[in-house]
Amino acid sequence: MTKPLKLNPPQLLALMFLFLVVVGGVLLKLPIATEREISWLDALFLSTSAATVTGLAPIDPGSTFTTFGEIVLMVLIQVGGLGIMTFAVLVVIVLGKKIGMKQRMLMQEALNQPSLGGVIRLARNVLLFSLFMELVGVALLAIDWVPKMGWTKGLYYSLFHTIASFNNAGFALWPDNLSKFVGDPIVNITVTSLIIVGGLGFTVVFDVLYQRRWRKLSIHTKLMLVMTLVMNVLATVVFFLLEHHNPKTLGSLSLSEQLWASYFQGITPRTAGFNTIDVGSLDQPTAMFMIFLMFVGAGSTSTGGGIKLTTFAVIVFAVLSFLKGKEETVIWQRTIRHTIILRALAIASMSMLFIFVVTLALTLTEDASVLALLFEVVSAFGTVGLSMNMTPHLSSVGKLLIIVVMLFGKLGPLTLVYSIAKPKKTNIRYPNGDILTG
Image (tube, rainbow, N blue to C red):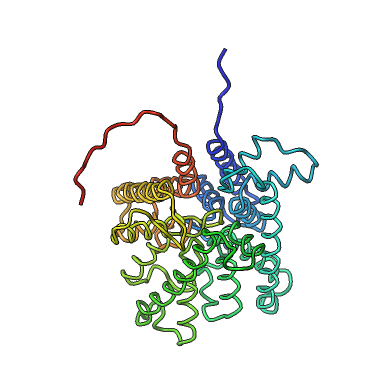
């Protein structure tokens, strides 16, 4: 008699996520979901892109899908962004059932929490806070869009793009994404605000709401807030300086539109994927800079992807400490444990190696520049959704590879962190050995 297969929390979450992707693909393939027939591969690609809150699309969602198909995309984005287990907890709470230890362990893994304590309360708060933010987003966008489109279409478009913004997915219902709103203050501020809040991470948001004083905030929250501000300001300034002479992007716009576009494109590479200019026309230095932003990504326990901003920050501080000859890495009078530094290095190293291998594979299957392919791969890994007009031209093999990258970007780091954070203890110690490096 065979023993039942036992899955640990990351493996079970991965299976649940894959099931969501498959179901989404089947629903998107239904005749009721599309205006014209699409292939099974495109349906699976779009389902994966929505569930991983990426936003890459080989076809235009706005003209391809019916209202039913667009609602399927919305549901996939919402569930993928907030997490399957978060919604499962909501269902259990509504039904009045008790939540067992196994479910709590899954919630701990899904929300990337260090302990089981308070994970159910956190899941409930995540849902309530997300609903509140999305209602605010719909109301603000409706102020701009209802007078232009009418009540029904205006509210519907506001809802779709609010869900996509807060969950850091780059899907839009216009062929040119949000380019027609390049100088619109309401759209720019609303969408970027939802992106920033969704990308901070729920633990950071709740820490700020509960503590309200800087000195009481956790070191993680302080680091996320400071690094988010620094990265957003840096990205906006660099984008403007690199692109303001490019007639295909900022050069043809007025100064105010250039500033809005620079701000918007400085925010969106942090895993959101919306664009108000033609990303395919970016100059090479700008594209490389955006690749860096997409690789770094958003915050832990957020709706975004990438290696995570705190992972990048820990590596930077550790390198600076090494260059200064310090034995310990200290951030704001707090010593960072070596296990955290090793975990950050492992995540970044494995991610870079994975990106290199997939990009190399795409150079064999696709007829495109290495820069465009690297941009596509990093965008998929960071669950961003920006593309240098590459996605519609991918071959079948290329699409399959990008699907794998999107899944890895959503699930890979989670499993990697789990395996590194749960080392097998041993009492065996070996003598030191020296290896020449550098």
